Image 1 (tube, helix red, strand yellow):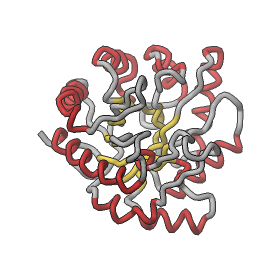
Image 2: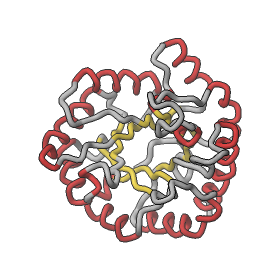
Image 3: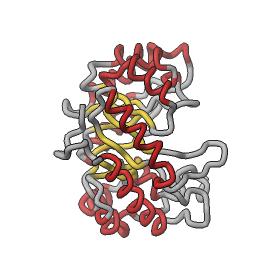
Length: 269
């Protein structure tokens, strides 16, 4: 399933978190973004991306500033949310739903928490969020390793099925995952996997290589995903420069343009 972009391979997106030096609060402990996306908008458009996956902190709370941002950047296809599900918090879900409507996003990235005893509660709270969103918006579980019970494919499959139908509660996979883990994910809930994060972040060094250096692995992963029937969308999530002296927006958007060309070439083979 695709998030509808009118392209042969599904939309190819640029994650705005890739352009943000303070993505992990290493610049400002409060977590406030430092990249000015309005100032970068022309260069973001010039990368040729079909749209963006908008990091939630890049969307200003002030309505006029948010409108200016959304008018400047390419279309928001996925909204990258960090809303929590460990607590029953209807106000947080309402706020997220309002922000999604404002952006026009068709997908919402999310993660549940790490408490196995809350599996049923997580499913119920995700279902509650589904009910608050427009009918044409799908939630996309990142099922993130190391932070979520959904890293286990069997658990994720149960949770996602309990939360809602496949057209409303989907999932994301990553290019750095092993072939065996990807296969297990598709075996458990392949009908829900509709988005890929193109990400080769090395968690041991926190370094990201230029995508060209991983192009052979990327091509193998693309072939594997297509063999499973995947025809969805793609986000370039991180780029070379993370946590280096080139971790600043101008250098990051320049690298993103190069990496998007590599990604396009692989997808268009």
